[in-house]
Length: 484
Ligand SMILES: [Zn+2]
Image (cartoon, rainbow, N blue to C red; front, side, top):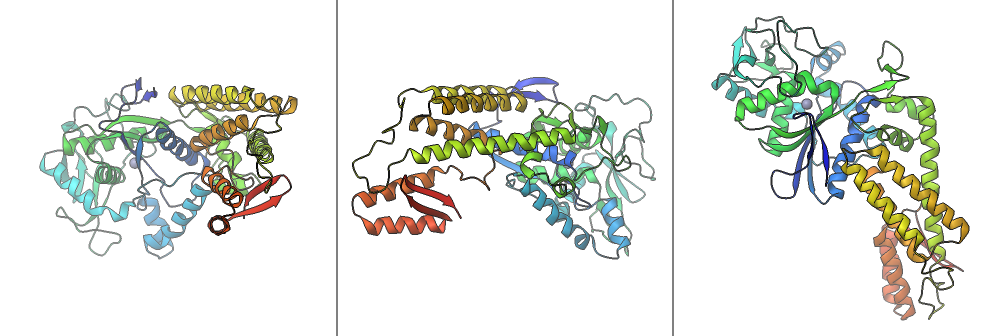
């Protein structure tokens, strides 16, 4: 049973989707004005683990992950270069997805951009004006926090007195507000100024918070299951998202909130001014692999601070190498257990193997999978989940050295590795032959066709595999296959 800590209730709760088997989740994405740093990627890798684990648990997942392609920094940087904001953000959007993919993350189902959803934002703002949750002042539109008594329910910050300037990203507009806490939904933009959009309440551009309310509710509905993001977004960004969305709809916005803790570098908060600021590219240029960076980022449970050190990254590098080698070893051993081609009659893959019936490997794999699931069910305890994998690796290595594995044991271990990796993505696929049950099945079918002298079918399968980039080799130990 999956349980995790819900920031909204400050309780560890059993996860239950609102209806059916579908999980709708929204994760605040990057502002595409620069390269994302590894602190950002810690949150995004966690979001990837979250979506993959929900699928592992049998849920259908609809994951929305936005790109913020308009804010003051983007507008200023584009103006400095005398180019449009689209021209300025285009390369950073491309770099972001390159880094995102390189780190082994699955692409979310929907990846909306803020500037493509201005109409949806205008619609929500119009609703908020209409029902008294927003007001106009000096041509801009502000959210009236006094109209939303639940304000503060997520961050549990007590609002006494003036709080402006308390947070780096708090709204510090110069215009007249009824209350210092009120934040801008729509900022006045003059006729000749760009970028600006026409709205019933005047030409302007959106505030930062409204975009996430608009994009999440457009694709997930007014109420959805999970909203996640970095801890730094809890206040004011997520608090404001709730105020806007619930102020407009009168319904619960997101049922569960998950916040990823900060990443520190050598125990110091990462910042450009301290010179301890790393992007994914900085680390890759120093020779570290994307797989090791991913491993390090997910090795600490998301609600604990992660202290990044180069020692830790080197450790992760040798760990992922060990995991890759382990899978390769088990896989090759399995390939050797297959029938030699042409030796018809020798149908038993276990034939000739010692201890074919001794299921120590299977037991080890089953226990590891149970511990893995128990750990992930416990507030996504990735550290304990990894420990269960390392225990299995140790046990199976010992077994292989001592007496070898039966074909059945090997198959069980490979299948469990595939399950672990469907969630974590740490074994790596580029360098080793990945287990692919579909390919395995086709190779087997081709062997069967050849045994039956059905060469037309055998050739057909060879071509089909070639199309998938699979090369078959007839060796004295049987048929081996590898990726091109
Ligand atoms: Zn957001």
